[in-house]
Image (cartoon, rainbow, N blue to C red; front, top):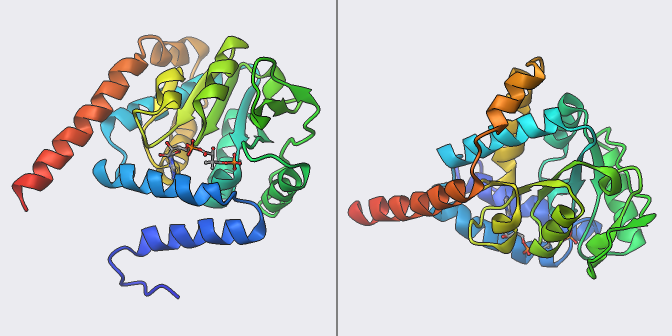
Length: 248
Ligand code: PTJ
């Protein structure tokens, strides 16, 4: 039991969720390592949604609202960290939710889908199609979901799939606390924020924007520059560290 007045309460509770996910067979063991890397980046980003993240979250939400077949891809970490807000976001932007994992087995995919069903999510998980050109198990997708999607939201992603999704003509939105990762560089829109803050913020943006006209949404997306966002994220880390150094 983590005491509520512990200064790192939130972070420790989140760790427990990931550990619980591993025990349930939902989160991969490697998900623990990925989470640790994410925590380290979150620390040097100030554990907040910075302006560059908010900008990307708004544009990403507009892209999902504009999409014909938007899909939210869910892996083992995402499933345990933000199931409720993933459901809400999918409803608001009319996206499908698909289970897609790097550490693949049909049993694990079924476990994740079953886990999500407790939150009222009917996730696609037929694993009946393949993304050509990708050798990792992430190539195994659902023919009703990622295969035909035009916009895919991929939290905690690996660069290879991001590249292949783009080669298949899809727009890719990544959520990755590491602005230096291959995924961050490959995606059309990179949200450098913790998924725990990013998805609820996107829910708020979706509520604000869901009744906008197409041309209004298009004007939000139009001049977006992902390279500039990544540079702002790196500058944000440098500025945050400089400030910390001053007050040590
Ligand atoms: O469930 P599976 O089988 O699909 O496996 C999922 C993991 C995450 C294990 C797999 O995709 C993986 O190994 O990912 P990577 O290559 O470690 O990349 C994960 C990225 O997500 C890293 O750059 C982390 O910094 C970032 N990350 C970790 N936790 C968070 C995060 N980004 C946003 N929010 C987080 N909470």
